[in-house]
Length: 279
Image (cartoon, rainbow, N blue to C red; front, side):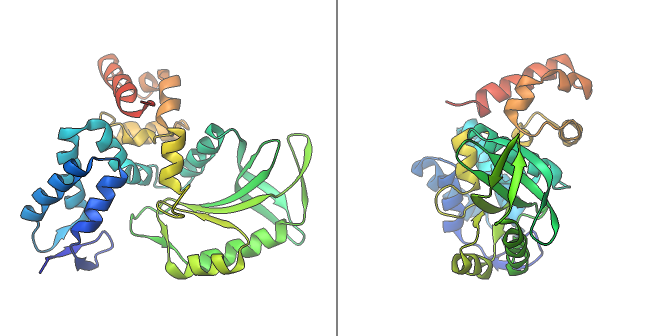
C-alpha cells in the first residue's frame, strides 16, 4: 500500500505515482525520463512526505536531465509565485492574450444594464470582444467553486446585452471567461456546462486551450520560472509590472534598477534565451 502524503492545505491522501507521471508527461518529458523519475521517487517516498517535497525532488531529477523541460514542469508553481496579490496574474493573462493578437486592458469599469462592474480584463480584435474575470489563488490546491461561478454569471448577464465604446468603437461582448491559475470544483464545471453563459479556463481545463496550453502556445513563460532570480528579485520586478520572460528580456535594464549585479544579469538573460525562448 502506498504511503499517505500531505497536501499544501494540510490534508492527506495516498501517493499516486500515476499523477506524478502525468504531470511529467504534460511538461513534455519523454516517457523514458518520466518513468525513470517516478521509479526513483517510488523508492524514496515515505509516510507524511509533503507534495512540495515530492515536487522539489522530481524537479531536481528532471533538471539534471533537461533544464528546459524542468522549466515547463515548474510553470504551474511559477505562476503561483506571481502572487501574493492577484494583479500581476491579471497582467500576465493580458500579456498572453496580447501574444494571441488581441489588444487588452485590465481593471476596466463597464456599465451593465443595472450596475457598473469592474472587469479584470477586456481583450479585443477586429472580430470579437472578450471580457474575463480572473481569480488568483496563492495555494496550489485551492479551487474556484460554484459560488464564484454563480457570481460571475450574474455579472456577465448584466453586461451581455450592452454596447461598450472601447478604442473608439462600439462593441458587444462576444465571449466571457472565468480564468484561474489553479482549478475549478467539479460542481462549478457542471454548473457552467449547464448554463453555457461563459467559458472556464484553469490549469488543466478544458482539455484543449487550458492555461498550460495557452502558455505553451504563446511562449509567455512567467518571469518567476527563471531559477537565477531570487524571491526578492521576483517581487521587485513584479512591482515594476514585469510578469513574463519576454518582457524581462526586452526591459533588462529593470534588473539593474532592482539591484542585480552585471554578472548575474548576464546569467539571467542566458537563462531566458536557453529556457524560455521558442525552440
